[in-house]
Length: 251
Image (cartoon, rainbow, N blue to C red; front, side):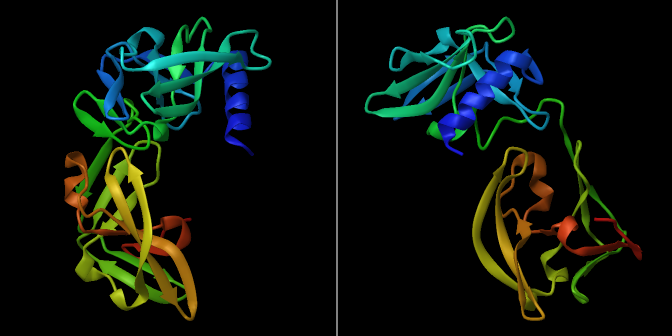
């Protein structure tokens, strides 16, 4: 499915049914493109296009004199309530931009997160997508015994795990690096970004002649709010066997 087709479907759905949720945010939101700020606003909206996390939509009037926002064709089936647009600063452009003109999203612009050089929330760089203002993370020290295994082979055991509790997600267990059996791990080139925890790196697991890709992740330099998990390793609960104080966890 092409990006343009996906964007068309997204715009059509938002115009027909509205977003899952939309509300103004008091946070200052800025977007950097080609070395200059394309917009700078304290009137952005958090818009949930799906139930999981929001995106920032920014007002048409928030674009700087360095930026050129050009309305293009109307999105088919939206009765002129959504238009494709282009955003450029100098020689660099962001594609797949949409300007909405619905009662709920009047004159708000959706810009793909990865098509700007950097987004800022106040003076803090943000990655991947904005944080959900209704979600929080708790990181709790525990003395419960955690055992992790796969295909009958124990990968890690610890009685000093960190339990990471994130709103609407299952608990994760971060184990000290000295409590992991490193002979089963090999480094992965995969990197992902979490707005709550920072940049994650991964390990593959190799057991009984089978390779399990990106089964373990860790944060070398997590965000300040998640600092306690630095260097700890977390195994995908859904893909391994986990026992908490001898009781097997469901997948």
